[in-house]
Image 1: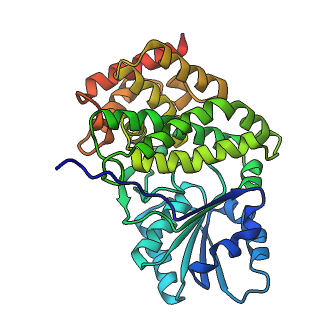
Image 2: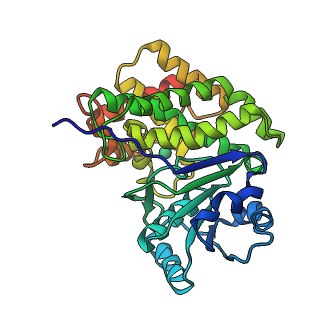
Length: 360
Ligand SMILES: [Zn+2]
């Protein structure tokens, strides 16, 4: 029997300027006692608006400021709070780490989870999985859930106030989505939800790429001025919903394995999405994509400030490239979804070539 097609997504997605003022209205069906797991900046950006949304309600709210990575120890700490305080709903507020920690906490405690991204730098908000890291920051594993978050709410005004570098990184994560899904579709590989890839998923992935190209530069201009425009809203949706739901149901390939490989260097500073953008260029070389397509993607990266060279990722030696290539090809990595598979040697060559073409 061939793979059954599968499509999953958050139950509810809300986005717009000052959407947080409607937080309670939009979420009240989920429960009456709330644990907000917040990054430090996420707390500052959202607390007052969330509290305003609860005006006149006697729901219990507990805010925890969280400064760590989505590690096993942090998840244990929040599970204890949920159990002791009989929390109904876990809310992740911030970037990927706070969101992944909230999703894992809610999953283990059997509670619904709502997600409030305060930066749109990764696919974390809408996906049905968390990325778990070791305490040294290296990639540990993906943790898969039986469902996607109950709700995702993005306040575009909050995103417009966040540093533009997060928006750019999110565009990098979103850039990989179409090309990785296309590679998985070619080999009938499974999506991140272990289902066959639907036409619906591929359509979202394609729209994601088109939206980035059409609105990316104008979205950056808006974010730099801290104003919400239709172009910024389009890219917020691309980074959050189209990219997240697209990747979840479309699958990953070289671009994300390249990122996971890079975490093996330890102490790397480059944002996830910037690595995924460069990894997308590497993937296009590995799959012998038409030169025009490679140049279109590379040109897009240049136009929005995504990296096209290794130096921009802080990678300077061939020895480091060797480490990345070996780690990116370990068993279970999404790079093995590629047609004809990829060896560490082939990946090494493609990384070096992508860098040379970026420096040219
Ligand atoms: Zn990603």
